[in-house]
Length: 458
Image (tube, rainbow, N blue to C red; front, side):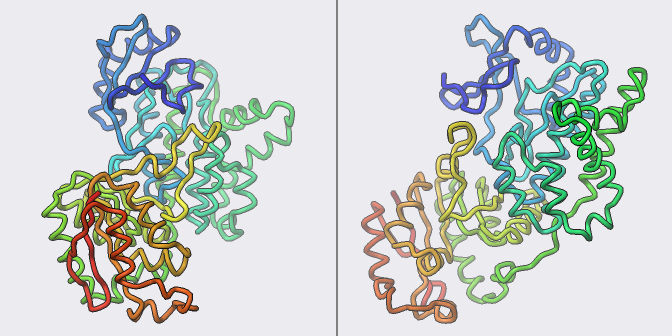
């Protein structure tokens, strides 16, 4: 068994993997709680409500209690999620917390590393975060929830999602109240004064009162607002969760449009032809998994998902990724939209840069789509054919469907500069590079006289 690199803090257990299966070794201090969760039917109820990953007691021989979880893959992280996914993860955390009230339990932590996504559906995976509630403590994870869910959502709703995702790479501290105070526009503070008074000001005052004991000040700030004594503790916990749920549900993504959100509308006729050609390839190959690189608003991600594939869609433009997330949600499609630049993907981060694996390690698929991508990587990112094909090949377990746009294409002529230095950018040169990188290469048709599709096999 291989221990999960992010499973090293929780005193209640450790997570391992073996042959594609996920196990959790339960420590003696948590075994009674774990067994009670099963014997009382709590686990079954939470799973049926979609609040917890499917979990069972394993028969693996071990002196400790061993649980087995249904694998959820591929893992994705909050530094990659568009607004809708982060909001859904926050709502799942609060709904699970509300359900645990009736079992005299709460979550001992509340951060997005506890959640993976299947398509656009969040799945809570951290079984041992469910603990017995302590008397006199409202919710020890309150501040963590604000730093990793509420505050990033607020910043993103104000059009500062890029900054929020950068701050979330601090996997211990997330987005602090100082970050929110500094980055929130004055307009938001004025129009959401009650939110500021309720969620940010108490933390600021707590810090001023006790610089030497920040943990105590944070707990006091969270508890004193809602707790009137042990006698009403459950009621006040419920009030806190419901207030937070209201705060989260009231937030909306920024209504922004970029030149890329209207990209497909600019070439409707060519889009219909490309859609027909791509659909033909997908129906022929019937891949179980697809990685759509440079997905834009997801025309081809949707095609693949409707054909039965599980799709991961990578798109660097936040507005496009958000629109795809809404599209997948509305149509209940197995598409996981992520904000990511293929040329600068999420690196490994966390403890010793090994706690959370890099994007290239996590995202592999039977079929990789790279449509209307090559010319951007060449002219904007200064990548050679060999470099970009090597990167795409690493993500494909079997196939790559790639588009080449010739220099004569109207869209390249509109924005490309210093084209003399790209004399090597030719269709013949591209085809030669494809044959070097892949075992077989075949034409998948031409979208226009200057746009051509190739299907490559490793």
